[in-house]
Length: 71
Image (cartoon, rainbow, N blue to C red; front, side, top):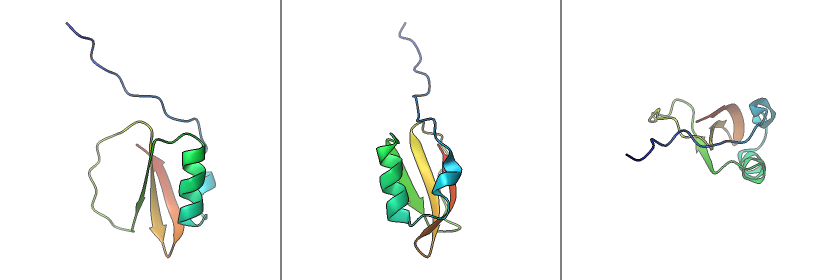
């Protein structure tokens, strides 16, 4: 029987450093630090909540990151 895959690795990063950055700068910095996927969302966006290791999520208001979380 094949082993069940576990969650992938993700960068060790302080997510608060992205809050307050211009969204394009934050996305570029996140990719440079090893995040495989970066997702920018408007405030109140309806999203699926499946966890994906290596994905970084931003809430962006008026072009600026106001919230950041992994998964």
